[in-house]
Image 1 (cartoon, rainbow, N blue to C red):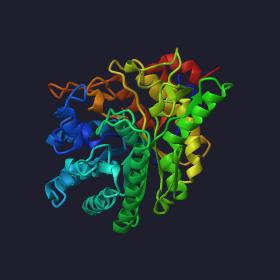
Image 2 (cartoon, protein in one colour; image 1 turned 60 degrees about the horizontal axis):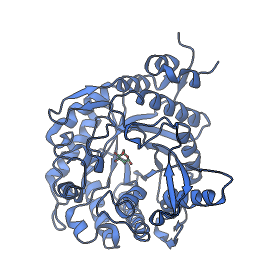
Image 3 (cartoon, protein in one colour; image 1 turned 120 degrees about the vertical axis):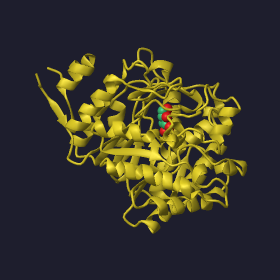
Length: 439
Ligand code: BGC
C-alpha cells in the first residue's frame, strides 16, 4: 500500500554523471594513460566503457529509457587539442554527435571541461603548477564551447579542483604523484585562475550559458568535540578541503590554512554551485601526519561502509552539504552522488536515503535544481582501476557486456515518478523503511 511519497518540483533534472577518461577508452595522449602504463594504478583504463568506439549510444539509451532527463559528461582536452598548435576537428565532431544524441533523447546536457586529466604536452610543461596553463586552458575552452554551444548551455569548468590538488600533490595517488604541503594550494590557485578565465570565455561565446564548477564537499566533525586539538584540526581540514576554491569565487581571495591568495578575477564567477557529495568525515588530530596538516580523516566504527571502505552511507551529510552551499547564493546542482558496491547490497538504501535528504532540502525551498547519480555504468575508477564499481549497470570489462543492477530499476522509478515513494523503499531497500517513514 502506498503510504507516502516525496515529490520534486516540475522540471527537476535527473541524470547520471560520467567523465571522459573513465568511459571513453584509449585516451592515450593524456597524463593518466602514462600514469597507468607506469604501473601506478591497479588496472589500466584500456577500452574503458568504449564510448569512443560508439557504446555511448546504447548507454544513453539505457539512461533515457530509465526516465533520466539529463546527463553530465566531460570532454577530453588531449583529444580536442592533441598538440599545443593542433585542434582535432573530428574529435569535436564526435562530441557534437554525443550531444546531438542527448538532444534526440530529450536529455539536457551538462559538459565538464576538465575532469582530472591533462594533455601530455601540458603535463610536460608543469601542468597546473604554474600560471602558464591559464591562457592555454582558456583557449581550449573557447574553442570547445564555440564548437558545442549549439547543444549545451550548462557548463562545468573544472571537476573537483580540491581532489585534483589533494590526490596529485598530497596523497600522490594521482599524477604527478607528489607529496607536498604548499604546492597543492599553488595548484588550486592556478585552477581557480583557469576557472575564472574559462567562466568569462564561455560567457563571451554564449551569453546565456550557466557556468559553475563541481566541488567535492566533505562535511566533517571532530573525533571528540571536547578535545580542542581535534576541533582545531577539524577546522583546518574543513577549510583546506572545502573552503579554498569556493572562498576565492565568493570574494576574490582564496583562503587556505597556509595563507591567502588574491585572485580578484575569480570573484562572482559562478552561476550555479555544483556539489559532489559522497560521504562525511570524522577528524582527529594526528602528530604523525605533517603532510596532511596533522589531521586524520576516517569513518567511525560501526558505520554503514561500502566495500573497500572509501565511502560510508551518511545521507544527512548531503542535506548538510546543501545547507552549507546556500551561502554562495546561487542555484545548486548535485553534480555527483553515489557509492561503490559491486553486489548492489548497500546502493539501494544509499540512493533512497540520499534522495530523501535531497527532498528535505528542496522542501525548505532551497534552490536545488537537479541531481546526477555517479554513475551510469561501472567505469574506470582512477588509481583503483576496476576494483570499485559505481555503476547502475555492471560492466564486464572483457566482453563489454552490461548487466542491470536492481538500483537501476530503483533510480528509473524515482526519475519517472519525479519522486520517491514508500512503495519503492519497501521494494528495493525495506531495511531503510522505518527510518524514512516512521510511525
Ligand atoms: C570523481 C569521479 C570518481 C568518483 C568516485 C569523484 O570524486 O569526480 O571521477 O569516479 O569520485 O570515486
